[in-house]
Length: 197
Image (cartoon, rainbow, N blue to C red; front, side, top):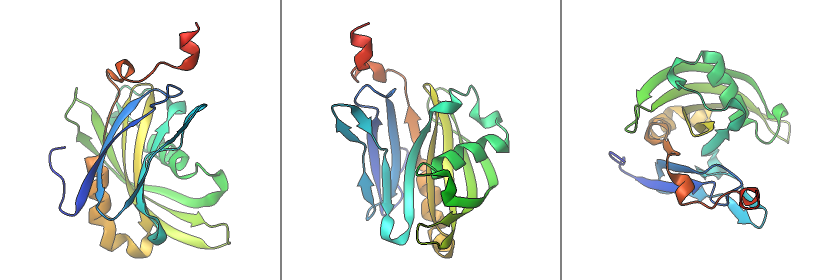
């Protein structure tokens, strides 16, 4: 990482260690007091994602690998609707009926350090529908790129009432996100079915 903001800690992790996923090297910084959650491994492969957050307060940074979108040659040239779809998929992993009024409010293209890779910083907001019947306004910042065979999204969000205070942190997290796929198939086991082909 070029620089780590004060009060932040770097996270470097491989997503896709078990061979049932195409591996990615994921790197981002998060506040020191946030709890990190990593994918679980069992005999069926890997499940879950890479996350960091202060969950009791509603603050989170979550990796979503959008495989249905496939590889995108230049993520920076995609229309606003592309980022809306990617973020809606990201926030609705637990079900499509948990949000409403989703809106992308701004996009900004940034350059990565490797092979002219592009990252698009996306500002968004939505209403979370809780299981208890409450509506919670949430705002966030995401970073979207495409490496390997998918589109990768690191989305950060908090409740709207905390957003003004946390916006610099969320922007630092999204801005620090880097994702790589090249060469990882040499260090991560092949998919199980490939061994018997």
